[in-house]
Amino acid sequence: MRAVATPRPAWQTPGRRRQAEAKRAAILDAAEELFVPSGYELTSVDAIAARAGVSKRTVYDHFGDKPTLFASVVARVADALHVSTRKAVEEELTDGRDLRDALIAFVRRLTTDVVPTSTYATYRRLYAHAASAPRLPDRPDEEPERILEERFAQLAAAGELEVRDPRRAVQHFTALTMRLVLDAISRDPADPEVQEIITDGVDAFLRAYR
Image (tube, rainbow, N blue to C red; front, side):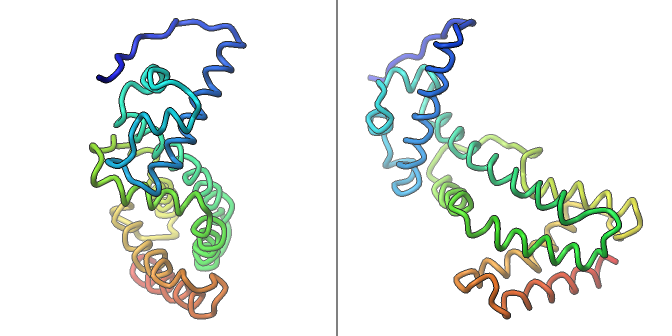
């Protein structure tokens, strides 16, 4: 029988707060370690509690139920990925830079700094398992595509791009660049063919949107 979560006190001493945060982080770490290889259905709360070194009741006290815990794991990994994506946008798609050079540099940055990371691999594997999990909550403001969408809207306002629908423009851009790169990512990102895919994709995008 599942333990029933009870509300925790509204206030905590600094020591108790640190202890609670440490337990929460341990639970998330354990859940990620088990959800990624085994998936949602085959991972039990009992196994997560044992891996984290806490009681099953503690897991429920922090997260309420297994679907919420899975969503929290996905959100934590996604947040780390979004930070990297936003940093790439802010540092590569800068004002005054040649747009073609900026877009090529942006895709190369994602290819070398984001896609090869364990964070990205974890993100993709968690979402591959998401079909067997309860529907994840929408987080539209946190989608990596939304970050690029905002920047494309700014570039359109500055006259650098002709964009009526920034979301569709981002879909076209990622299809012409990142999606094709991912198909070839088993190669070294510095492989000339991968670099050619990036350049050709950016050029095709600019022919349509400039």
